[in-house]
Length: 547
Image 1 (spheres, rainbow, N blue to C red):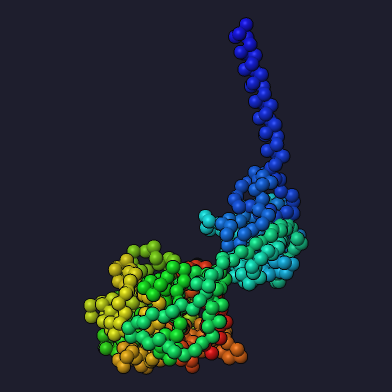
Image 2 (image 1 turned 135 degrees about the vertical axis):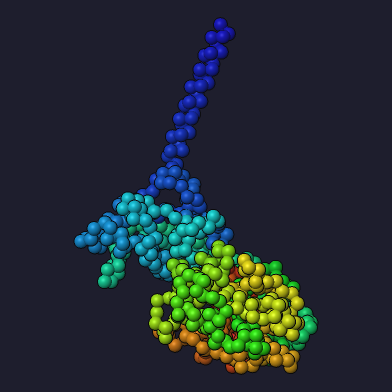
């Protein structure tokens, strides 16, 4: 009797568990969030349609604190069918080659940014079949996704400016577009809304106050006045991350240190990876090497240093490329770092085991010899560094130490090297911010430091001049010998400035008609706000504070 009772009890327990399990599954099923056609939902992870629970939806985004934001749009038909509404006489293949989605970002009822997605941003099969669209806007995984880049452009082109501290309402709208003789935009396909909370870090008085300048060899500390309230406001914005990833700001006026400040854990002894700022040093050493007759002239051609017939794509035009053209980024090689499809893009060079061979193997660009265009060409600077290295006594590293750094009193130096163990003139040399300022002041002094002419005066002046135009269709934007040349606006005036520039927002500004040199180091590498925020710091804070 006891055995039968136990079996009966066990059966009842199993039935109870089954009922509970079914109930739980039914409840879970009810909580699954099926997307409605025409809706965009936001989550902090990616999951296929039908696998979202109501609790997974992100209703409020904490900007700069949230690590992930994904969107999913639910469509009533594939993209190709929306494109057909705009161009009914085109077949599927033609439609997918002329159209894609259009995104609009609306903050507090104002359209801040709209973009027609690149035609290649989605595969033809996705355009033909998919009825859901899901991508990350940002993610700690840093996926290689057009969604991330779309969000980055929205933030760069207006989002950062309007998403001020407090709560905002963000609406994302999705349409289609086709590019015919003109761009046609279709009807609203889907939309989604999310609240955005912008909470800034608290800035203490200790963080905001003007940082004291310690005594230093070779420099005097300026006694001139400036608008300290303006610099305090700048400090606050850096602490509150309105300006992000800033490491140091050094301002030299009339040859003396006026402002010297460090942020985000940096200090005077810190070595800063200023990336392509180091390119300018190749220009410096070329001028010194020519002056000392280790190189006959900046107009010597690369064929005088290399047997070009031993490399691929030999041509008479390549043989005639001069060192001066390498220094002005106007050599005519098929190389453009701003064009990912360019054969000579720097990202194609770095994985190779011989960067000089990579450069010399490149073809020349398709243009008339008399119409070479300026193009930012890192590989050409590597080639220039190799020429100098093989021409000067003891190689470029030791030569630079003797002829530049020792006379300047620069002692803390960390180079990067090419695969051939030659100092990397593509960039990456690390110095203290105060020593980058010495380098800038050297050019401000027309090549002189403490009464000693380190760089030939004529070369120093010419290096900062407007030698080539970066855009033939524009009257602004020039380039010297591995120095940029632009203007900085303040008030009703534009101030001419030459500057060394590196990825992340690293700059050495040398003003032509103002007695100032400004160094800003930053680590916003590959961030779209890197250079924009440095230009804002210069035009809206540093120049107003000084002038």
